[in-house]
Length: 331
Image 1 (spheres, rainbow, N blue to C red):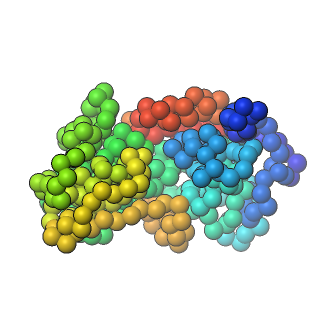
Image 2 (cartoon, rainbow, N blue to C red):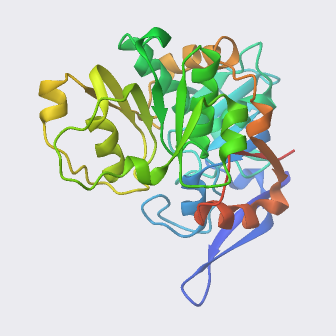
Image 3 (cartoon, rainbow, N blue to C red):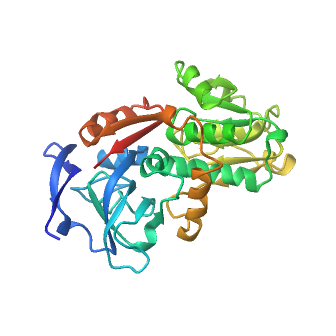
C-alpha cells in the first residue's frame, strides 16, 4: 500500500540528544505484521515519554514512533480473526516500544495483540483509559479477586493524580469503596474529590522513615503506583488480610521492608503487569471497564490534544506535572 501518513518521529541528534518532530512516513515502511489499523486515538503514558527521550531500556533503536496505545479501525488484514471495518484496541506487548506505535495515523501489528472494542465503549473512551486505565482495571480486579468489598474498609491509592491512580480512584468510587487518595500535588484536592476520593493525604504521610517493621493498621487494601519507600509504608499500614497491588517504580525499585506485614498480618502483595497480560483475558477486563467499572467522572480526568501538541505534553509528564489522562487525537 503506497500511502503516506503523519506521525510523531523521535530521532537522535548530533549533540547526543533526541528531537521530536511531526513527520511523514509511508505505510509500506511499517513492520510486516498481520493487521493494518487506521488509528483514531492514542494516549500519553510515562513510558511514551521515556521512549521519546531516547531511553534505551524502552526503545533500542531510532528513528522511532512511540505510542503504547492505539484505537482505530482495521483497514487491511491477513488474519481471519479481523476484517476491514472492525473497531479495535491495541495496548501493551511491543507496541510503541520497538514496534512503530500509536502516535501515528497507521500501525501494523500481529493479530494476537488486538482486542475488539466493547459495544458500550467508544474508541475515544478506550483511549481515555489506555494502558494506564487498563492497568488500573487489573489492579482493581486483583483486589476484588482477593475478596475485598466496600464493607471491609478504606482503600488507599498512591500517585492518585497520575494516569493509573486517577482511573483507579474513579473505578473504586463507582464500585462503592471509600477511597483515600495520596498525592504530592497541593493543588490536586478538587480534582481528586471530583473523581470520588473521600479524603486526600499528602505523599509525605505515606513515606515513613521510622524503621518500624509494622505501622498502625489504616487501610483494607491499596493500589500503589509509585513503589519504593511509599509502597513499603503502605504495606506496613495495611490491615490484617488486606491486599496491596503494585504497578510502578517512580519512587524507586527497592522495597525497604521486613517480612512481618506478610507473616503477622497476612498482607498480600500482588504485582500488576499490563504489557504481557494474556490476550485471551484482556477482552473481559475491557468489558468491565466499558460497563460496571466505568467512572462517572471519566471525562473530568481527560485532557485532549492533537499530534502537534505531543512534544510539549511529553515534557510535562517527564516533569511530573501531568494530571489525569492525556488523550491524543490522531485522525
